[in-house]
Length: 236
Image (cartoon, rainbow, N blue to C red):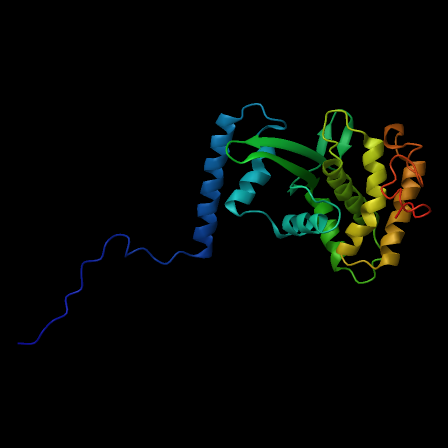
């Protein structure tokens, strides 16, 4: 009598097709939606509403974009040594004072704790990525300069602990001018190309910034000089 191999009956789990990348993305989106709903209940009335939770939710669910990760890593490799995440928003933030190119929020989550998030519109995020990919970085565009300036400014708000409702914008702006070349070099600029970006920022600082962004202490040996131990080296 011939033996016959009898396979055990397949379960519903066995009959499922292999999980595709699209299935995994869908799962992550469902996880994100669940986390958002939990946070919405746990943290009603947080600054900027539910949109403020988005970067944290995206990070937990593995949904951050390549440009967000790239800018975040570049900032942490050059000017920022405090934990923070970077978020590219779909649109510019409109406020009664006008359009804001960048802003920072601090959101507290159950278990995770406080998370600092730098926000910038996607248009400026794209400009930073474009700058990093360009060959001749001495030929930067106005939007690329504004994007780099904004990203470093928001990072300096965190680095200098200027996250209150009334931050010292003059201190933050002076630090931003001094550390912009570090970020530019992390994006691939030569020292000369990074200096060119810095010179344009100094010109804007002297001619176009509102009074609250300026200070007589932003000078060699001044209160806001980051390298007072190196006289004559300002603004580097």
